[in-house]
Image (cartoon, rainbow, N blue to C red; front, top):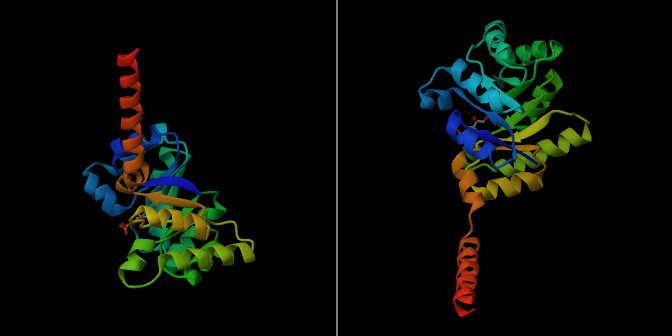
Amino acid sequence: MKFFIDTADVEQIRKVHEWGLLAGVTTNPSLVAKSGRDFNEVLQEITSFVKGSVSAEVLSDDAEGMWEEAGPLTAIADNITIKVPMTAEGLKAVHRFSQAGIQTNVTLVFSANQALMAARAGATYVSPFLGRLDDIGHDGIQLIEEIAHLFELHQLDTQIIAASVRHPQHVTQAAAAGAHIATLPVSVYEQMLSHPLTDAGIERFKKDWEEAQTRS
Ligand code: E4P
């Protein structure tokens, strides 16, 4: 499973990018609004150093509007992926984008049937939202398992992005369930990185080393 970061905060993206494990970025309108910056400017900055997929979401309700919005976005860089909502108009747009060789990420996926439809329309990625499903008492991880099984059974090469990830356990479980990618907020990266026994181990090694130096 590959790692994407789910944010429009360029500093956070730089920080995780420097760790050498980042394969892409997802943004959404809420995250861009939170950054308080111009969308195009943010995308230009991200694509100057992230060479993997960078998802940029369109806001139109109709396929024609999505197509028009996507033009200036795809002109920013070759690795812009157009993020499209899981609607009938969204599917129409995905089909047109795929015919034109433009990568798409179908977002707000909450069922296996939605994922199957998006894949058949030509989506590059589908994004099932784990956390939001868990919030309403459903099982997000079970959905990933189901989609992964169906994509394999029917030889669909659309990739599954585990989205709306809320904690490190989601990450391990999404990897085991067959997600190709997990897109994580920086807070989840930070939680995954540290372990109290790692910190205690480093302290202990340093202490033992210093004690040996003072003895010799
Ligand atoms: C995915 O691409 C979305 O941006 C994101 O994961 C949504 O997560 P949320 O439910 O925490 O807003």
